[in-house]
Amino acid sequence: MNDQDLGQPPAGGQQVANCHQPAAGRRKAAVGQKPVLYFLLIILLWAGLVGVGYFAVQRQLQKSEQFFAEQLNELRTDNQRLTTDIVDAMQLFEQELSGSRAEMQQLRQEMEMIQEELELTGESLTGTDATRQSLTERIAELDRQLAGLQEQLKKLEAAVRAL
Image 1: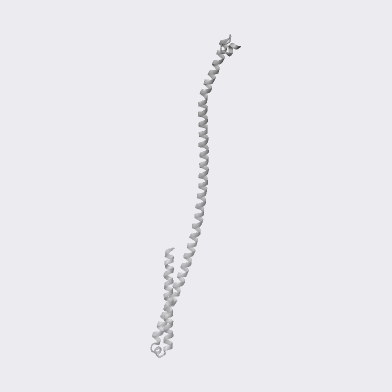
Image 2 (image 1 turned 45 degrees about the horizontal axis):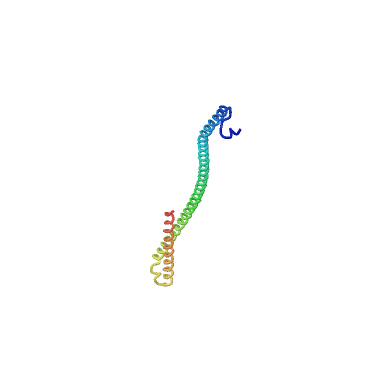
């Protein structure tokens, strides 16, 4: 046994040598399999990362799409509300405009009637200053009302055009 310990082969040296040869072949095969195994692991890892990335991006895109759809619905609702408000405001302006036109027409008729009365009374008015002054004040008041109504009419027409 001491001889074996010193590195000398035992009596059956051939058999020992044959046992070591297949082990060396296994090591070479195992060493040759390690790079293939690493390559496969790297490809699996890469495929896993790509798959996870794909699903993460897909989920994020779905969230973004849902967010934009909600924003679009809110904008549509706001637009419908604003359209309704504008239509209501325009109808109100048209009613006020019609009312102002009617008042202006009535004032014109009153002024024409007063002018006719003045023409008919002619000389009889020159004798009474109080009557003449009251008629002059009434005409001035009607003129102010007419001017005010014309201003309102212009504002209403401008507002209708702006809408």
